[in-house]
Image 1 (cartoon, rainbow over the protein chains, first blue to last red):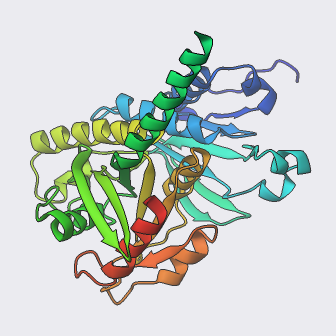
Image 2: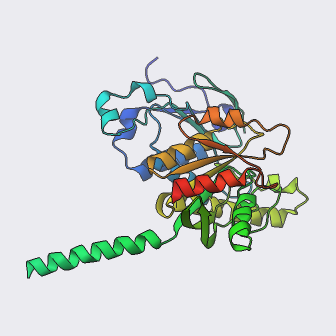
Image 3: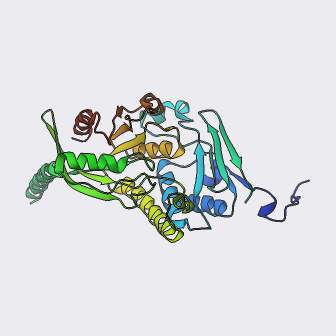
Length: 131
Length: 213
């Protein structure tokens, strides 16, 4: 039923997953992307990015994550992407001018709730636990 | 007037270039926690300067601040390279003080260590984006290299167009699997070594001179 809300009272009842499209991220600055991700993860959500982050944004994500870690509250993030997922789908022009695509499905969650069971070039298997 | 200005600018550019060539290059030693980065930094510093860089430990995040050893002059096959070694904290996306409790460290000290470790990792990321001219990436050859941190860091280093030398450390251990490291990053050359035992350091120094000279 359109507009119907699931029967969930709070985070204790389930795990919320935010799937964020590439189009949604495209208009954001690097810091806005990082804030969007970390605000969701700190609430206990799993964030899935359709197109991932650039290497520089990943670097800043690690840096900002480190500044927000605090004992008994937030222990950091677990992040998984497919290694070199889109390397073969670069256009000729992109390859010619050395522009690398950053499109890679990325899963990010709270370090204390998400555990990677298996990862290879074609499969990321993750265990998500309740709080 | 314009001609003189142009001439002065040209001379300035040439002299700047000459001095820049003599300036030490800052080479960051990066990698995950417990890969042997400080052991390697100490090995290089002791071999060429006689001094160490910092204390080594089996406890993760023993290095919680980037430490620099300046003016390490390495000579190899007629090539000389003058570098500043920057030993960085092991990069991670999570730090939980409870992990330190497993090493007989009390809670207060564990919390302090975890806070320093997070600051150190943030500092290391900043160095990587802003302040290093090349990277020695150290991996423990007894562990799986296909981790997200390794994938991300190599991607960040490549995006910065920094020269990177990948070292497969701990070859003195029976579980060492150098091929696994080489397969993980086939776009880069992998050099095996034991920083602890000093095995294959000759090749490491030759490659440092080649990559960063």
